[in-house]
Length: 224
Image (cartoon, rainbow, N blue to C red; front, side, top):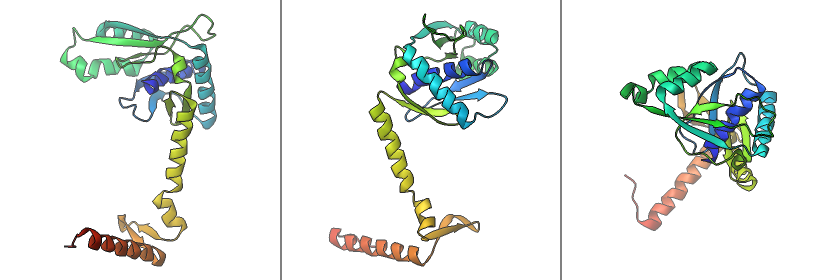
């Protein structure tokens, strides 16, 4: 819920900073990250990501409520047509649900509503979705843009820092990097998925095999 909410904040921040940007639908899976695809004349730079993250923090500080409005699918199309949201308009015509029930289907139109103290333009980011969101933008306070644009969000800074510490530890232990730096193995285009062991790597491999064979003896397993 927090990452889905952060997705809406991201879209609003991009529309504030880059008016006229066309926004695609967000992710279906928010297990680890949130993401939006944008149609923009150029790719977003690292400097752009910093600006977007700063703008997201400003929206979070404003504690802006998420507004939800249930409309017919045709009303949703009119909303997106009026806003020039070509990608969402196309999706509303070609989605599985639209093909199944083109007349009676409904859509939930959501927006991160502008608060009274906001200096943002009146045109706030709007998307069609029915998944739950946090009551206000403040719930997404622990948010970070990573690349792309995709990002992740947690309920608090401590969880966010722990997540990136885990990611950094996994990067530090990445066997592909260690294999290259420790001269353990390499890969060849002749067999892209198979590692070719160097002498040091062969020693490690043989030690692991010997260790496993000792465990077989202890726990009563046999090799076939």
